[in-house]
Image: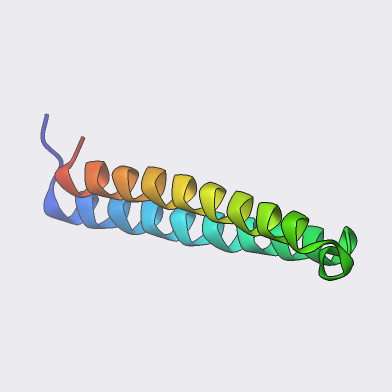
Length: 76
């Protein structure tokens, strides 16, 4: 059963807001870890590992979130 345009917009908007919250929460956690682990004082190699890990997790969260938004907009 296809969703009405109003329901699709509401669903897509909800999914989009959850996506924004997930990205924001990820960055809050990463920044807290950065300061908690005192990454600024670590060796350059360890700083790079932290940055790469942060980027990989961010890309995964963004990719998954965009897929959910796409499905919500199509009404699935």
